Image (cartoon, rainbow, N blue to C red; front, side):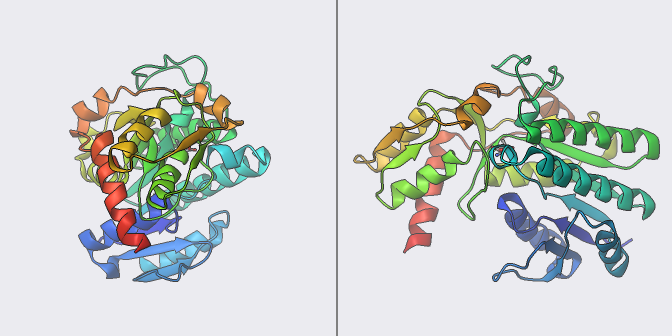
Length: 313
Ligand code: AKB
């Protein structure tokens, strides 16, 4: 059957870059980007979908004879704490709608993004293993643990081929993330290029797992292309890029911008970060589908700065 891919949440930090990567790989005519509103610069097929509406997802799946769904819509960790019940409702309802549509219309493959936010107070914080005990401290984290378990349930009970990655904080230049705890690691580069002082909402030595957008997108495409027998974890796979603190990013930025200034004003996001891993053990992803990151802190910094200089010209 012809591959037709529906991307839900195509306007977000991952969705926008992933949609382009899928268009390059499968052809623009085979990718349906969707979100609650259309982006001015969107190219190719676009459909408005509010993923809390089951019938709307169903309509698009039938209209385009969709064979794969990437479900990227979610409210992230920091934003989610503003209205926990609403965040829960959106994160879980949209996912259950996607799972049900996929079951009923025999979708071949589904992608579900999980997060390092699934880990909480009980997991070891250095080199956190894939199968650590999960007791998250944010509503976003709770919804991702739940989402992973629903993925496994639909796989075991209905044979749905759902593949999932626990993304670290994603650093990219194409769009600004919204509402995450790791977002400072994107904003900091914008401030550096604009020659502005950066006020960081985390303490200087708060290390978190991060990944460059190119690695995150490549990991997503690779797990989705891996032979089915290689996918042994049906909740979600840890993947690691590189781990670092605000102070470490600032010191790399100073190599390129010696006058760069950072000040620290930790807020409620510090508590979230303190319950997340400092670094991640991704040996299962490496073993099962050959995952390998390519970017370290220095290559992320060089690429972010040169791309942002272009953008701000
Ligand atoms: C967030 O900070 O909430 C996200 C994530 C780690 O999933 N970037």
